Length: 241
Length: 164
Image (cartoon, rainbow over all chains, first blue to last red; front, side, top):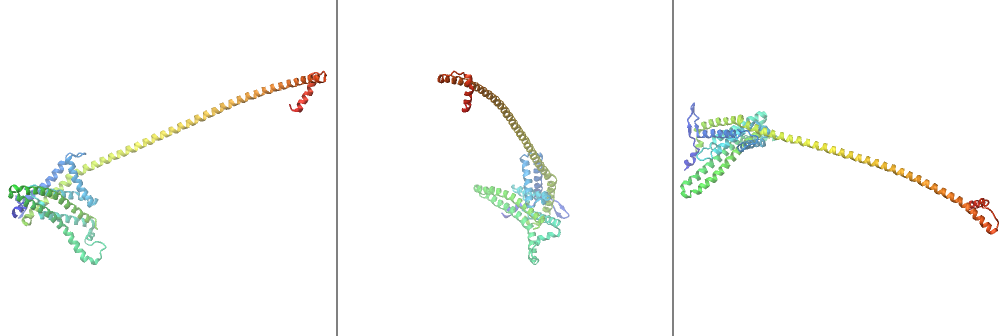
């Protein structure tokens, strides 16, 4: 049972690639990452192919995505965040497609792997830190010791602030992983009862349908949370508090 | 759990980097500028249309103002003309009134003159009659034959004395 439930998270190489003794095989995870890129690109390109001044359905949808992320960035970062728009948008589309594509049965969810999310979160943290130092120079260190605090309190405040700064990457990645992981485990467990209960399998089947809808919502919500928190961290780096 | 199997980490990280960078390039170079251009163009079109509407509105207001000014001018011109005509009529009427009064006054004066003349004539005859009456009275009472001509100055004197 346990291996059955966790089987969906297994990484299986499709095209084995070894470079200098390092295994960088094209796996099912990589396939879904490429699929996320393809879906995002094809959807947006196809939707905008007409470049209509009065948009059709697909174009409206693409514009809604654009304006949704642009609005999120504007509300949380302000105009200074404009040049990060492609990055934030890509991040949102990548996580969203990863989450949603993973909801299809027999698929793979690359956002359920902590290593992927941790890499993204650390990338965001690195970007935010670079942006902070680039904008404020050493003044960015004020993030770790807010102005006006008595110098003596630095002994306590600085370690706390440094810790909480790095904890962002941790919470960002763990939140996304845990949500995706738990949802998929739950679905697999409930789905496991369908066959076992015979005719009464209709009950867990209904449960799977309900959970599936819930998971779809969570997929979108987690992509949104991941993106908006990135925006907030970016805001903190651009505008010191 | 497969999540904690480090042998799969290099491949996941490698493909994450490859796919995310690809997505970033595709989004920033192709997809987003396309959407951005369309949105900008639409915004521009809308603001152009709004500007045009605004311009037409001000033009309309200017036209209305011109029209109302012209109307007010025409109205005041008409008023002035009416006042002028009324004034002219009043002057004309006054002139006619004066002429009529003058004519009437002349007629009245003439009539009065005629009346006076008649009266004087009558009065002159009255004194002659009075003298004849006086002569008749004198003849009847005193049986003295006088003629009216000799009594006339006396009668006149008495009449003057009495204020007749």
